[in-house]
Length: 141
Picture (tube, rainbow, N blue to C red):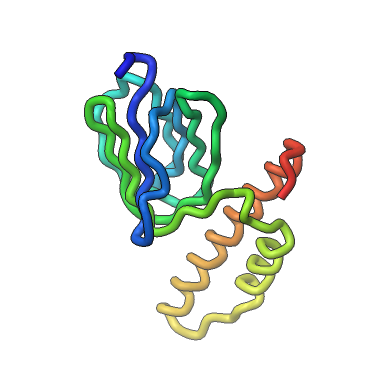
């Protein structure tokens, strides 16, 4: 494999989403975001939720809404194990807005409900942010 690329694999519990050579990746972590380029130092991190963008070595790029899991970079191989990965073109601005409105309208009564509502709100906000950004870029969702 050439030194200007690395192997990138995205896996969910349902399927291996892809396993291809990449030249760059930007991914959400639980405490921020990270970029990965060829020859990156090894690391292991907890995935957050948000946009995972991969630029493929053969050209083009693709974005996914990923949620929870782990990422590992070892040598020239980046592996993402995500709880879910949805291609951003499958997200709907209208559905994301509705999901956020529903989550904001919920009134939790217990600590467990409060925790779940917080997660639901964060997930919906991330989807809203991604869909708006893609619309602004003229990529339409």
